[in-house]
Amino acid sequence: MDSALASDDVYLRPSVQTAVKLLIVGHFAVGKTTFVGTLSEIRPLRTEEVMTEAGALVDDLAGMRDKTTTTVALDFGRLTLNDRLVLYLFGTPGQQRFTRLWQDMTQGALGALVLADTRRLSQSFEVMGVLEEHGLPYAVALNQFHDAPAYELDEVREALDLLPETPLVRCDARDRVSSTRALIRLVEYLLTLPPSRLRQSEGTPDGHLEHA
Image (cartoon, rainbow, N blue to C red):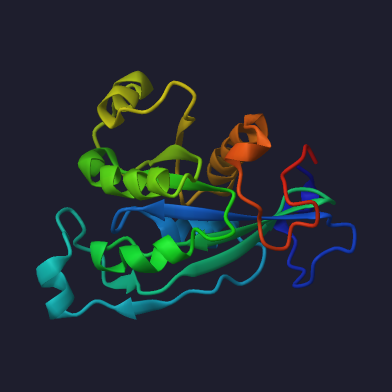
């Protein structure tokens, strides 16, 4: 990764050879919009709306007193890792009623980063289940909240019933360095998988992810 990580350029460099679509997924209010906004080198596209009283009746707001908006379609951002590789980040809505929408968003994606919250680990199972149903490889990143209980990663891996090879890391969605490391860990994992495990990413000239 190079110094262009923080570039404000709107247009892609002409040297870019590979564009990879990645999903940023997770349950409601886990920090997906913040994560995409922290990493995007362009002004992120957001589809946030103010939460209504009707929404509060169906969305779990426990421990989320400051949560006033919610994503209703997607978040979109872009991150150039080096001269040849660019990542397109698609943040998905977290509520169950939007599951069908982000199932459609798996089309053309190579993998997903699942953001999880140790206060609500059980809510990650449905998210991971949808990814597994669609055959989409993923890594898990524990987003750090100030009032969230701290567990050893091995404990969390067991609680989430993750495969030994599934990456599990900690991150702070508000911090660019921490979030970048989590995303790089996902990309490194995808590089270890055989082509048969990876979907062809839209906009990828050769149809697969190579070491860039």
